[in-house]
Image (tube, rainbow over all chains, first blue to last red; front, side, top):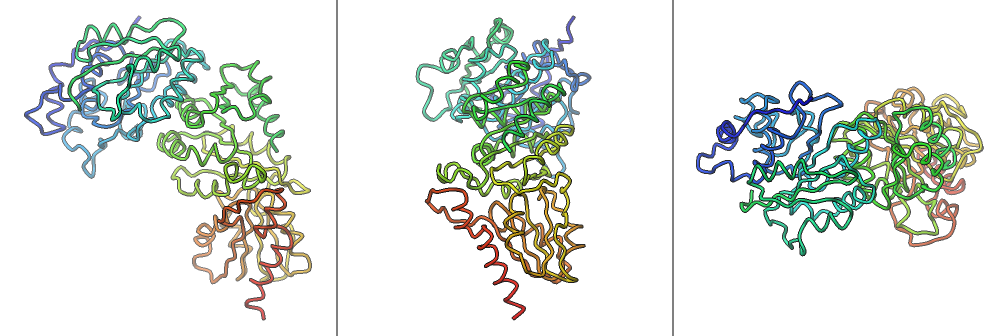
Length: 231
Length: 297
């Protein structure tokens, strides 16, 4: 049994993102997270507008709250929010800000914007689900490579790995924007603490799907999605 | 106080499957029996306080009732942005239970002292309830009441204590009644006993509460004459704004006593720090005499 949304949102996303940005020149690929979000909402996450409050739903936490245009567009494409919300981004009456607010936007699991908060909330969510015997839902947290500069992430990485928090997947969209880089690679920061990791082309949907569903028993999973464009 | 918290929390974990405890090593050994019985609801994240509050927020998002605990300076001061964003901004609550208070860690120094914690909660929007018990017997009922809600609650425990418990003093409870129009002295939590000693022979009313937030504004208006004195075991003046709002349309004079702003850079006992901050009975009396006498004479 599955409640996975199977719509291929690719066709409509370009138009939705244009409504948000008013930008006719840049393709959706200008947004670093667009492909990950598409694969997640099209093929991976067991969540629909009808199950947005179901305890059994998968959770998607956008930790990297910056530049949420792609996120809003995907939420609109899947019916969580009306398309016309996209026309007034961050306007005085808009529910969509430059960082998402869970109390204003249906389908948004956490309010984010200040970097380094999503993974801790994700660890707590994963623990809370497990403690209540909700073993089917999975928690996905999307971060940026520069966001990993925040030390709070490393508290969460070490703890989740040490305790084998198996219902947690972190996704790092890596557009090489961390000021001092990550010598030795991002995956190693996680695997040294006991995570499994897949590093893939962040534009390749088949590879992304395999990585996003590639978690192994007993350990939290990391997907590093490499993209070239900074966005 | 800490023992009362550990006993009450252990019982809550047994009785209510919604209760979850998040620790950052502090008190972990005392919770070992509870951890054995409820390994998925007694969570020690190690010395990671940012994560402790993030985890509490995540637990609350799934419908559990998290209790997070450490020294006040690590639980509150260090994690201020996590409290602001991972709890308040997400629209979820938790029970935060601190120990250490303003200067229980007198020998440990400034790094282990948090006189400013209650003031920090006043900067938040979530409507935090702040409990400052003055006696161990006040702890369990306050904790149990907090556990049954989803509200944000801060429980500030210290080693200073009064001789007698008043578990029902969430509003101002009059313990000493002065004459008509007598100055009102409000003692919060463990400041009650030094306050009662300080006012000996003075014509004042003394009211006690263990719940400075929400402050009992109605009780204050009912009891206050012209002169109002607040005696608080944390940063002096923390409740000035609250009292000022409560008495905005009433002519009054306000003296707020509490822990001073200076980093004393001295060790010694908590009693020494109380004396240095003017919060022992003699220091309080000096401040009261100066304040009351400044008009009377």
